[in-house]
Amino acid sequence: LDEITSSEKNKQILQWLRDGKIKSIEVGRSDWYSNYFCFSKGDDLRWLGYFIGRSESLQELTIDGFSGGLQRMVHALSGAIARNRSIQGISVDNLSNDGFAALAGALVNLNLTQLERFYYDSGINSDLLNDECAAIGTLLESGVWNL
Image (cartoon, rainbow, N blue to C red; front, side, top):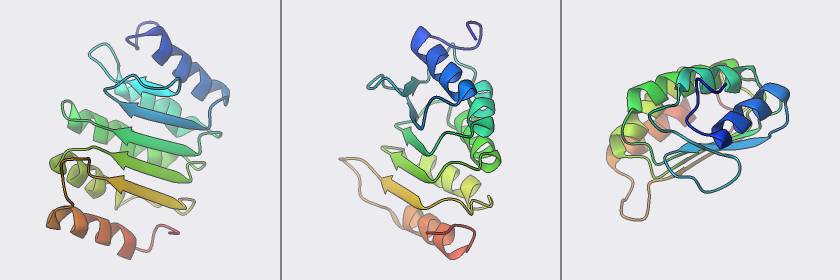
């Protein structure tokens, strides 16, 4: 794990995911809480996605404040979410408009029948744009989520 993470904290989160000892994580560029995977240059998001996808204990996933590396994040996390059967809630906070559109586009095609909660906060300086509202509507109308 030392070779695929940028910090001891991120290594610990991957260990918790692997060992079934964590129910909630946040993924982003800030380092706020003990369960916050702070994405930086030294992190391989494919491994984070692998451990999220295999986790049987993870119930809540928060994606917070991504800007750079967006396509890698969307690819890694949407695939992980698709494989995971324990996540019941997803929160998306402070994601750029383009970022949310990319994530929503990836999530709409997933069969997330166990999902009970989806929360989106566009951030303090932004309002929901028409495209974001349309993406959320598409997700809800798709019928693949039990919201």
